[in-house]
Image 1 (cartoon, rainbow, N blue to C red):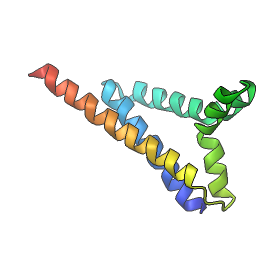
Image 2 (cartoon, rainbow, N blue to C red):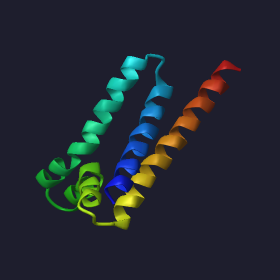
Image 3 (cartoon, one colour):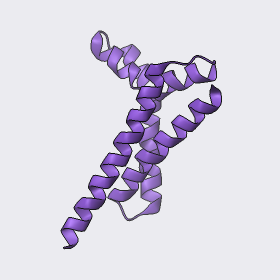
Image 4 (tube, rainbow, N blue to C red):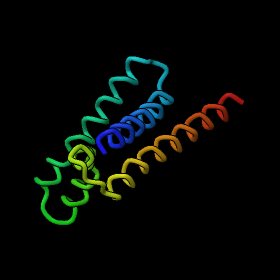
Length: 107
């Protein structure tokens, strides 16, 4: 299970990083922004515990740390798979839209 979690985590980081990279021409800036985004997605669990009510629960659910820990412990949670696949699809979709917008601007 740990390997599946690692693959899903890496794929989600790569797809979101690819989107950020499509927004800027600087490789270093894209790397730093990707690191910042993944850091935010990593610490959402702590922020979710600090916020009371359903908003806190929603924030904690968006955390990649929570779901990746389940995979490391050998727990197959379909919610974690859905979250990682959603991040992957979101990153790929936003990258395609960004590239299409750049292509439209150049024409």
